[in-house]
Length: 190
Length: 284
Image (cartoon, rainbow over all chains, first blue to last red):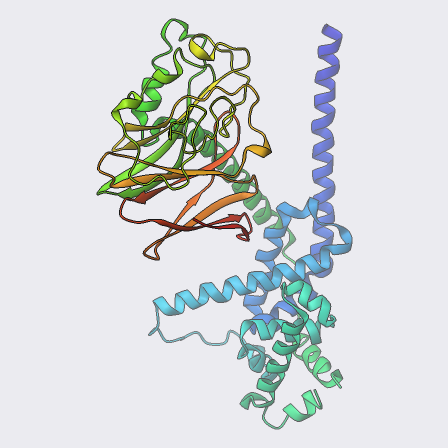
């Protein structure tokens, strides 16, 4: 009886230490992923948001949200998972900002650029003028180099929607005043 | 063709170098989020348990439950409490009606004298009983039930009967009543004693019954297929009533009820599954 109790206590201790070891392993795997993919994710987020600081915030929030799920994310799907999470969180961010703008419609934006290289890139400015979904399609299709099917999968829509959204996005970029004179060179026969 | 766009995007994205990855901050935020999430889940689970305990006590007819529970008589300490579920509700004749099903794990003595419900003679059949099912004795009392002892509203059959006509082995008791303002005033059909329990073949039982002598309201009850989760009834004036399917206590058999104003007729009945796909359509 006593031996059984001792064995059970030992098993519990081993379980606990095993779980702790698993958690440590997960943390190490997560930290390695963050360190390796941070720059790439921030760049993707920059194209999605049009602002570098917001991009860093977006990636940081997305990674923090992914952390509790980390154990369930398979290695072969982690890149897609993070891209999808980034797009979804950006969509939430846009919605939240829209609410803030509706609630405070008359407050002027008095913030000045913090440094010189914050001067907006014309292409990023043109992308920022696109609707959120069209922007996500352009970024995933032409920056992440995903196929139409992969983009459809990550955005949770049909391939036809991806094609039509891409077509509309490129049409809008062609006529965007920020890209005046460059649109034909950039977009060519797209 | 897309190369210029790709390279332009790459130029734009690579114009600035991101700060080093704030791994520690992310881990801290992630852990805090996980802790909040677990706390939220625990709180939700606690609320669900509390609600599961509280709901039977706060149903529209608390007197029914309490009265029924309080009539355990000599065997009160060992008899499981009756369970009540709301099959549907609606307004008619200037009153709000609830249709309740009360399941007795152990049949009380005298199925025709179930506690909390007045005696059957206090009521008469409603003015309209289109499709009203009739039990073995020919009385139009069974809104769901079709045939007395093997009625469609089944029970688990696992009850340990104590007295009365439900003393046969494996019998348990079940009744459906209507209530307004928390007081049960109509018994829709008497206690069913069903030894075989619910089975899929007992679905498809529909019928209606008057709720009061004035004919100001009727109750329409249905026992649909197991996949059905909601039902919509179209009335003669074009208005619709929608209700969710409830699982009858004891048997887990799906059932629902509509309260139909007395001056309107049922025109059609549509049943839907969880994906809101039409399962069945009946012209009544």
